Length: 135
Image (cartoon, rainbow, N blue to C red; front, side, top):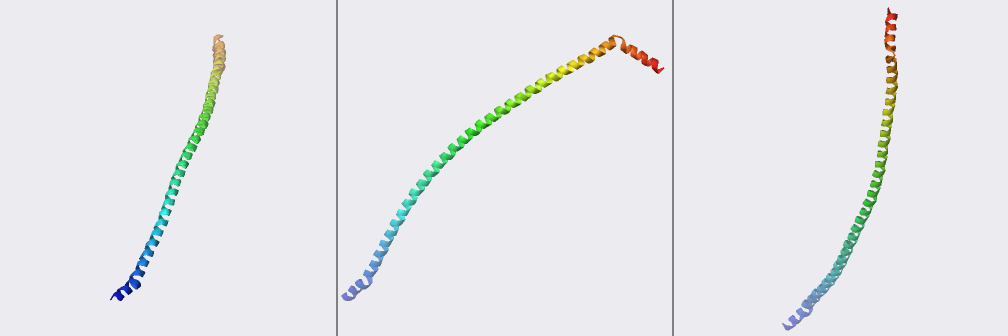
């Protein structure tokens, strides 16, 4: 029986223990490799987050600069447009004054001619001549 026991230990149990130990060693090695990979991924994620933050800051600064430039352009454009509109208003106002002066001068001439013709009795004479002519 002792021989049987010895034979079981050497042929059956020891090879099984060696297989278990080898499996544990393989598992430990794989766990270390996986742990190393997890650490590398963690470092890469941190780098990506840092890069993303830097990119966001760069985009925000670029956006602010773009808005600043566009605001300057828009302000300049509207100022130029406002000056042009003011100039057009001034020209229209001057044209209106000239037109009013022209109408005023024309009206003065017409009134002067009509007044002179009527004041001299020309209209009455013209009407009398027309009545005589029609008879």
